Length: 105
Image 1 (tube, rainbow, N blue to C red):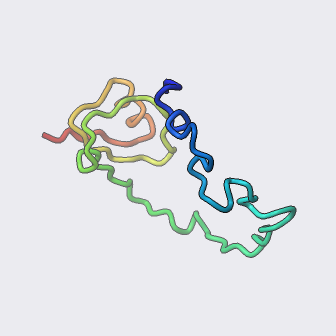
Image 2: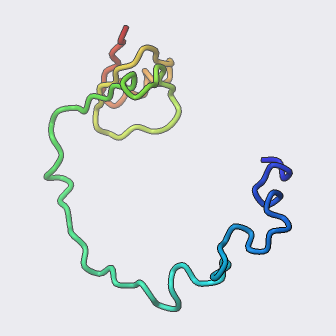
């Protein structure tokens, strides 16, 4: 972003600079020292138990996307993807993990 368009430029000449009248961006947001360290009690979830045998169906048209590109990594689990267009690399990757590409009109 250009420096002339930044919020900092607009706030020049204003003493508090958008951080309020009293605190003025001076306190510690995360506390001080060892504050906030009580995270030892956690709920354990058995991820292997929650897995189902059916492949998940991902409909990207419903989310407002139309073309699937081949950038990124897929999980080892097979997936069924519904879209209007697939790139060549995307189709290879989806079929490589045992999934399916479904064309939607």
